[in-house]
Image (cartoon, rainbow, N blue to C red; front, top):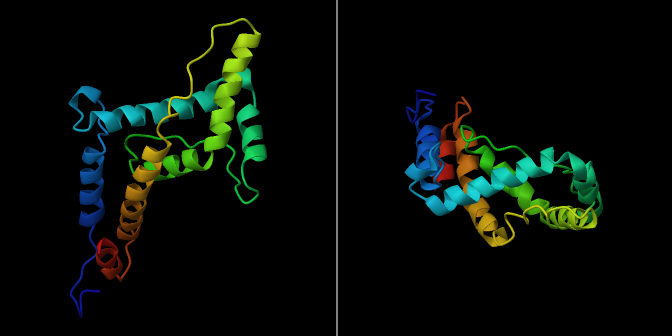
Length: 168
């Protein structure tokens, strides 16, 4: 690896891309310090959506059943993925899964509201991402190439030219 082009394996590219995109996407622990408050708010709604679908026990297994019924046969996803701030590039997987399961999500939130009305209870909040589908698709189109380059860059392989080619 050190002969020929004299390339050495390095973590610089994945680390720099991670730091730059994390800042640009407004991912910070304190939302008041965000450089992109609109994106920080969207990420908060993504986390809220994932949490609600996984932890609202009164709905039972309805979400996974809706995923079975309302998605294509080749889609095997039955739940949303968790997002952790320190694992920023996992956001691409989370957003991809939300877009993939959009119809079951809409139906699940509608059923939550309908169930509360049937039980004469206070209806829960509506789907937090209702107006954000196109934004999520655009974010995914930005995240996918970044995640791919970072994934390639994290391998200790003898051909780090792939990282440089991935950047271009």
